[in-house]
Every structure is written in structure tokens, then in C-alpha cells.
Image 1 (tube, rainbow, N blue to C red):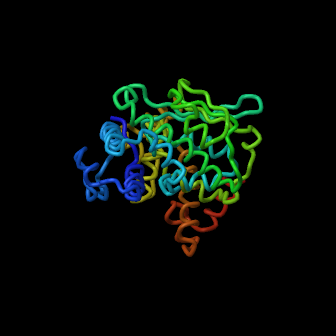
Image 2 (image 1 turned 90 degrees about the vertical axis):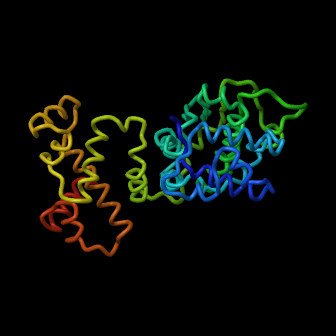
Image 3 (image 1 turned 30 degrees about the vertical axis):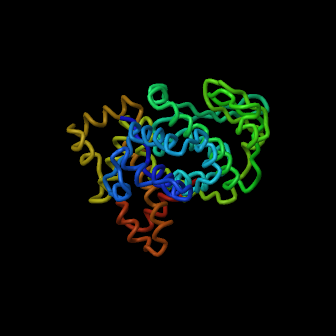
Amino acid sequence: MKQLNDLILRTLVTQLDDQSIDIDRLLSSVGLSRSTLVQDDFTLSADVFGQLLENMVGQTGDERLGLKLGFRTPLSMLGSLGGLYQSSATLADMLTAMQRYISWLDGINTYHWEEDGEHVHIITASDPAWQAAYPMAARQMIEHNIGFSLRHKREYLGQQVIPLALAIPYPKIGPVDLVETYFNCPVQFDYPYLQITLSRALLSSPVPSANERALRVYELELAPFLQDSSSLYWQVKRTLEQQHNLAKPTLESVAHQFSQSPRSFQRRLQREGLSFQSILDEVRLELATYYELTSPRMLKAELADLLGFSDSASLNRFLRRTRR
């Protein structure tokens, strides 16, 4: 079942509170309540969210509410993904991170970007089955993404981000559509998907808050949500991360988790073009970076022991080698 991060719904509820909408009635229409949203085991399915947005439009009578809310949605809705964007080096890196990790936040829409001469196109497309089942909900998400996408890029880059053109998958409403009014650029209607066109020169724009160490921490947090997280590489990496919390992982201990002998497991890795030591080193480096950032007072000897090194000198040699 497709899902969304519950951050999306909690943020929406906060915004709708400011719109004088009966939130409790809206939530109860899909079997939810405010208390449900703060439960640790709460998950937001695509079907529940679709029906809620359909009911929201029915209750307000405003089918362009998503477009209007996009300008005001707080950046906190992005959660760890926002931290990843904020820590990236350039807009191009931000867009690459979006394409790679967006499923952590939004499991309904697909996102990608492509270069075209002097332009860069940022593309969002709804899942066809979900769009067919919840057409008004899909419109809210797609149109919300226009203002929110441009706004968070402007905030993270610290400069104006003005669209050169837009294309939306909906017909024009009235002599001058609200999208034309809000963005003052050429708009193509009835397009197959949402496309925001920017100047290609923006791709190299630096992110003032770029931080490579913080970036690694966010990548570590979001890695399990990558689309290829079922691959052997990610299974081994997750196992190493889990074992580091309890003991010092070894080839033998990881092979045991996969119900294989160390020799058979090593051959399996080699068939996939993988190296146990390389994955272990990657996990150690990410954890070292994480603890240096979040626990700056931790002694090097303590960190060395935590990561499975004999002493702080061995850890220092490892960090010099892997950070070159």
C-alpha cells in the first residue's frame, strides 16, 4: 500500500486550523482524530489521505485550496528531507537528493528533474490509479507543489527562484487562471504532468548552509527509504548498522543473519560486485561523522571502541584514509 509521511497530514491540519475549517469533522470523516496523529504507530495510507483531501474540498468548496496553501506551508513539513536539502552544496545536489529520497515523504507522486539546453525542468506526476480514484485530491497535491517547491528552493538558496514557464495537468479555469495570476509566466494547461521550468544557470547556485557532515547524517537516516533498499547492498548495510548498536559486527555475524556460512556469504557478495569491508568502512565512516556532529564531547578512544577499532590512532588512520 502506498503511504505518505504523517508529517504531511500534521502540517496540513495546522494550516487548516488557520482557515477556520472544522478539522475534527474533517478527520472523523476518514476515521481519524487529532489524538490519532500523535500516536507512535500511526501511518498515513494513500487512500485515507486521498479521501481526506476530497472531503476537504467538499467541505470548503474551494478546489484551488492546495494551490493557495503551497505558498504558506512551513518548511518543517520536509522533516529530514529538508535537512538534506539545507546541507547540500548546490541546487543540482538538492534536486538529486529530492529524486533519490522523496519516497520517504511522498509515496504517491514521482519526482525527477532533467536538463534541456538553457533550462531545467522539475517534474511531478501523480500515481495514475490514485489520481483516478481521488482526482480532486491529486489536484490539491500537484498544485500545492508549485508554490511550495519554488518557496523552499528560494529559502534554501537565499535568492529569488522565478519560474520561466509552468505546465500543469489540468484545464484552464476562467479567462486568467489562478496559476497565471500567481506566477506571471507562460502556463501550458492539460499537460501530462506538472513541470516547473527554471533557468539552468540556477543549478550551480550554492546553498549557503551547506554542511557535508550534516549531509552524511541525513543520508544515513534516509537510506532505508531508497527505492533500491531491498538490494543486497542495503540489506547488508542495515544489518551492519543494527549490529553496531549491540556489538562489533564481523563477516561471521552478518553471514549468520543471512543464514549462510561466511564463505558462502562472501561469494554471494562477490557475485553482486560487493565487498564486505567496503560496506563496513562506509557504515563506520557515516557513524563516525554522526557521532562527531551529535556528540562533539565524545572522546576519540570511546568513539574508536564504539566503531570497532583497537585504539584512537587506528580510528584516526581510518578517517584520514576514507576522507581523502
